[in-house]
Image 1 (cartoon, helix red, strand yellow):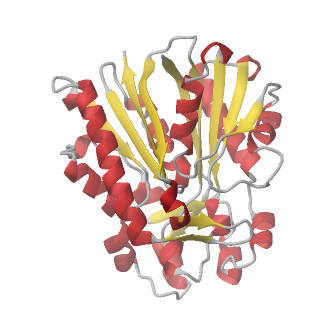
Image 2 (tube, rainbow, N blue to C red):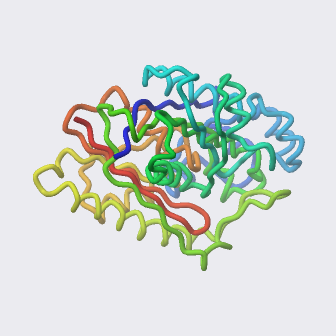
Length: 327
């Protein structure tokens, strides 16, 4: 059994509104963006003046201009998770990190975040693009006797640094966020993770990419079709697992890619409007941090008896899910 002790999230202060994107003169309007992806605003670690002046064409300059590096946003989200869990940094026995937008090839992002927190323990990156958070939970749940009392999972996604702001198809999507979780297979908590899974279809590995020296790119139509089908299957499996008597207490959280896609999945799975949790309207596509950030933002709203089905998809093509149950 895997237990969730605390969740944390961090969004940077700078707001990328639809009005700002319209001011870049790349063929967007508020109405056009809302009709396609349902996003009103996003957050970024980049100064708005930098985006306006450079359109983020120079990737090295973008990294240097960022207000926060990943180690900082990772530590900020982790401190919230640790505080909610009532766990001290010195109690953490393993740090897992990873996502779509690391600061460096080496050292491991997990190591830099651990250093920022003053944690001395094994620290490794375990990445599966936007599926990373679910994949990390799945991996930790299978550690068996090798698992420490407490583990820390962090997904820092400051992806606006690799967005081309001359390309309206990607510029309208992404916002920065970081999410973190304190987990254990040994110490019980009020939130049990009763099911995790991870899978991938490498035949689609070239459909979403960020080259080491390039911007984000994707085969949007193919990826959206895959995401809707896979997330629907994952949530339907959780609906069957909880049974008809508990289904009214089951929340759905999907990969925060775009609102149109999320509503399509909710419609296919007959998810009631008040059981669909999302934050994409005001935070955009936050890559692997999006779905756990939604859960973290609703942490204080969850009640005993609630169930949460978290389902994500990512490059690879990969997918992961977790079913959370509150005692």
